Image 1 (cartoon, one colour):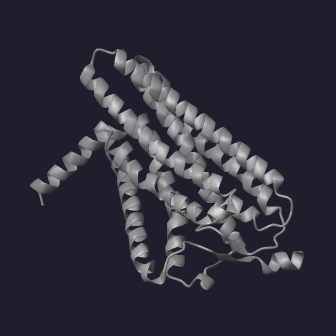
Image 2: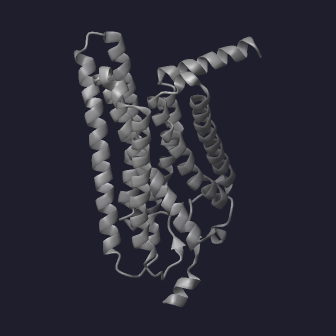
Image 3: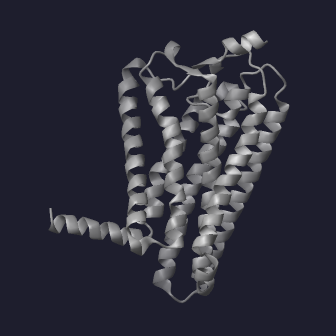
Length: 311
């Protein structure tokens, strides 16, 4: 088994099923998506870090999202693009590289849920308890919340992957566009019940807390807005909340579908398609969470106007 494990340290990536004629069009589409995601998220971080008027807890908290989106997209897309323009039989990756990719894929996925939970709480305090907002959401609190989100993600994913890398391997093919925990423990011929149980249990816990906190906080925000007398402000708040929930649902459904379909090998192509929908939220987040933030939107408009006046 040790010799077999050594041989299987080089893995074959199944990748996306793309006909040769479509390889380069798909590559260009993914490249444009990657460039857009990186430019928009980097632009938001630079804008928030350089504009003193945006140095508030809410905006510092928001920086977690573009950082997470950039890291998650960089871990996944360049490798997929690399494999698309190669023959199926030449899509190799070492086991160590696969583990590293899977680790950061899961860290980014889990951290995104935690960050959105914190952002929902921030909006709840700002709208439902505005008089205490500055006392609750201090810079110190933002640092603590952000560190907790990333620290918990790193710790729990370390356990998740630790249970997997302890297994010996008898297979060498990753039946997925990128590496993840389920793809890795499927390489083993040992009993993986513990891996399945822990993976499903942790996923259910994260999804339950994430879904519950986001909908409860936004539900309370909507309730306060409906009962308030400021109709114009309420309409904007409800519109913002509904847009945020729509993006959140896209992320939730794409992630849940990908995890669920892993349990049904006969739907491997559907699983691959579902996995690619995970690049949609990183492209939408800068538009929804960034441009719908009044201060950021005004800064972008001011910058655009200055460029038109002084070309």
